[in-house]
Image (cartoon, rainbow, N blue to C red; front, top):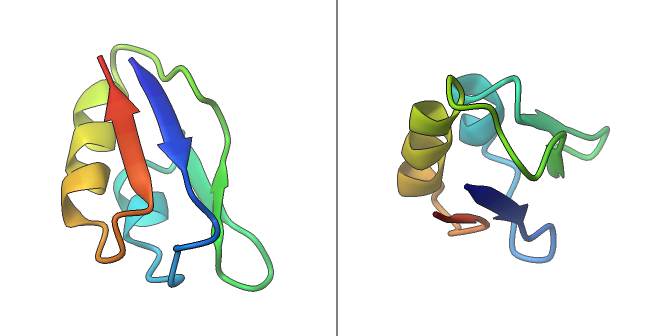
Length: 63
């Protein structure tokens, strides 16, 4: 799996960081920060969930 996070469309909801804290964080402005573009197998279900619930669609992944 490879993850991307588009800071240009991120609205700072923080759901990604709450759902997959090992993969996402937020900067001082609340925008998504991608901690690792290739998450561990253990983190992959949380990444899928984060992508599904991201209100702006900023979080995407490919298998």
